[in-house]
Length: 195
Ligand SMILES: [Zn+2]
Image (cartoon, helix red, strand yellow):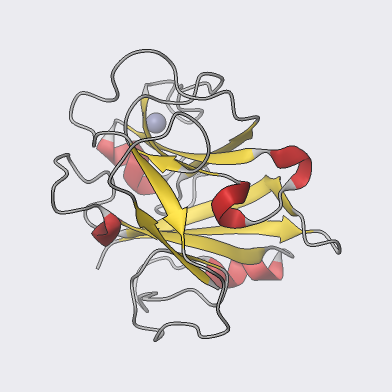
């Protein structure tokens, strides 16, 4: 388990949040064909080894009804895209989005935070999962996916301004992991909750 945090400075590649989207990612929502907002990218520097050093980007449909229902048709699912890391496009981020910052991970530890902790982390067990609504974690693990990471919007720093894409909520990510420890980001799925 590793906690990860928003840094004071930005980075063009690697794990990052806010700012301009990755250069090689289609920002069209597959559910409604409308635009999505770029949220963050997680790469091997935070996730650990991934197949082909790919990274995972999280997008949120700009249409709130679609963002709520999710592009998978499952309640409150998020759109996750795995891709090679070509860095950010030139230009600004979403109009009301957060400025770009790097994401940095603490050293790994065997100590998982309290299950009620809503800190952003990789590995361990999902934290702060709410018993109501459509918590699809068990469905993900039944499908052979492993809890990969959670992104909590409490991680945005106090000196950052922006509209919270998930209503100050938490995004839970699941993915397949190969026997050699590499995460297969092509299998990644996610959902979000706000409590
Ligand atoms: Zn949509």
